[in-house]
Length: 147
Image (cartoon, rainbow, N blue to C red; front, side, top):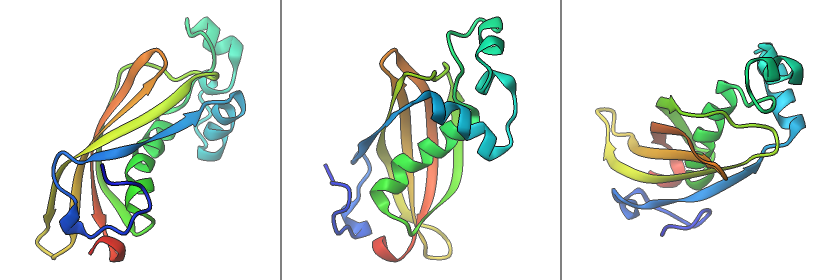
């Protein structure tokens, strides 16, 4: 396994490499503040009574938060020179205040694009203590540190 923060070159990364997990404690404040920061004011993300009326057990993370966390799984490993170029997600369940969200990934492919940039294609899974909540196929261009 390639460890986060080590000195990687793109030649060291191969399909099948495991991306170190990232864990997020999903606090009530984080669930309520994320939609405020992203202007996603749908009440299921910040109003417990509305979420309950929807049949949800608590307020839940918005899609933008899950997209950002998915990206973070890859960028925490590859570093700040990474630019996400594609993300295709399939949401399967909600992530509620009080959950622990864990992102895990693996490298699907590493190659140079037509401009000579190093590209990593990765598969990312997000899970809580209750199981899988989201899967994503993500591509990123890696600059400087891995090129």
